[in-house]
Image (cartoon, one colour):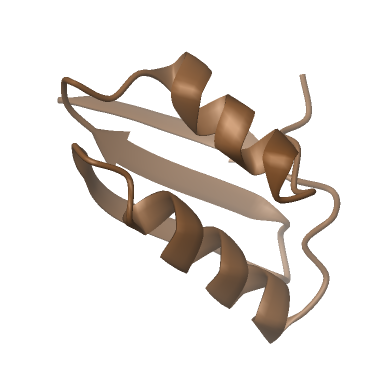
Length: 68
């Protein structure tokens, strides 16, 4: 199991939080997604077959790219 916490500057409201949590949460292997509009931070916990690269690609695709 892997966990990563990162900043997503585009998160600004409850809708953004819901979009990130629901979209990333649907990926196979993702166990939990917690996003905060207040801190603009997201924590994702996942296992194989998922990878950070595919999670990051999805976030970029839905216009919530993680900050490097």
